[in-house]
Length: 131
Image (cartoon, rainbow, N blue to C red; front, side):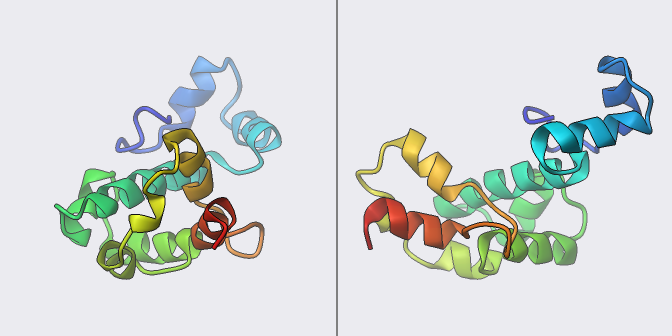
């Protein structure tokens, strides 16, 4: 699922690979990862979208389609929920504060989290950079 984030979610296929029933797989997944398969997939998509937006070469619509989302509105709403700002605002602002931060640390600091259940990407970046 992490590698094929741009593909549609196939819960029956994932359940079959895990040798579980379609009903049991999402419950087991949530118990193991703390979120549903769909929420996990969307988190991976937002994570990849954030990277693409930082590059600044693609429009928000192009990024939306490239990460496997078919609705710009749903993508923008989920991005905003997880990252704490709209995709357009995220793309437009400077990401120079990342300079000098090892990629393994930056990846952890930029990992999207649900608002209200953890720190947003900007809050985690501030902790890492000491700002």
